[in-house]
Length: 134
Image (cartoon, rainbow, N blue to C red; front, side):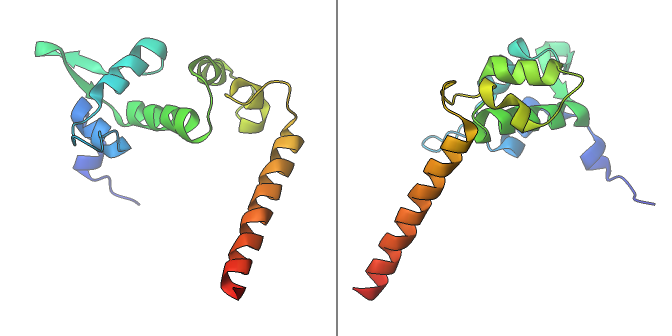
């Protein structure tokens, strides 16, 4: 049976969550806690415990949801409304079903986007080969 580390099960402060997500300003080194507070206003799924002094404490579940939201927004290019729809949809949880919720142009087919990316990758590979032969 796997034992749970107390540190992993404990609530995290907003600063600890920002650090865990890599939400750090590269120039100043400041944590971007404002991003998490904004996401709280947009996604009802994020519900930290707010204690004395308005300090926020996030559960392991909250942290998982925030990581997922960050992944969908930053890595998959979904919009805020797209992520909301995805999180509120209880029937489907496949990213392919939500391609139209992203920042991709709605008139472009997924296959066209993939073909274009493959074409660009092939071009880069050929350029690299030419550099090696030159």
